Image (cartoon, helix red, strand yellow):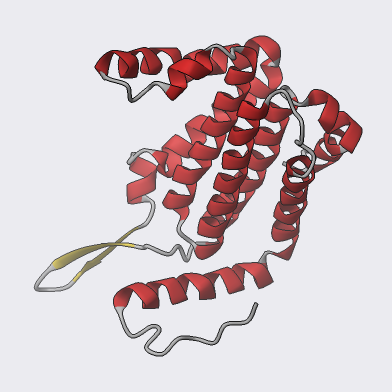
Length: 239
């Protein structure tokens, strides 16, 4: 759908920033075609599964699958925009949705605790205890140690690069300038560092493939029949 540029678009700071992000996405689309093609291939596997979840008994986990896919798309958008720390924040969310979805498929009674989280302080405390990420991750490792270890590594990577306000996520984009009269510190909202952009795009791909492998532990038969498992084995080779 083609929409003409609205009148006064770019005349204020927000729309101007969004336009700068869009221009950065165009540059990434042109300059990182191989990496982008890989993201497209990963997204296609999400959509194959999404289109074939009818009548699944794990419908509750299917909701987390959709949320995880949505987060993956958002992280790709942010990475293409050059908003790298923000991309890592959303990548963490994609991982968490996947691990939650897996855990609830193996512990369906915990869904009630999750649904009742806001029913008072006691239920919130109970939900926090039940859904501690380390506990959920351990559950995944008991079923699939290899994917569990990869999830743990990627989860920690997202935290280091932006999901938490850690050293790398803040200082990695600082610009310092000094004149006779003053010192100035700035932070790049849109990354111009080629290597950092490439690493973030690659991490998006790694998370996308890993999240799909997590959900294969929920929808194994569907993944195998649909050929998604075979495709994932191909997609992971260069990651």
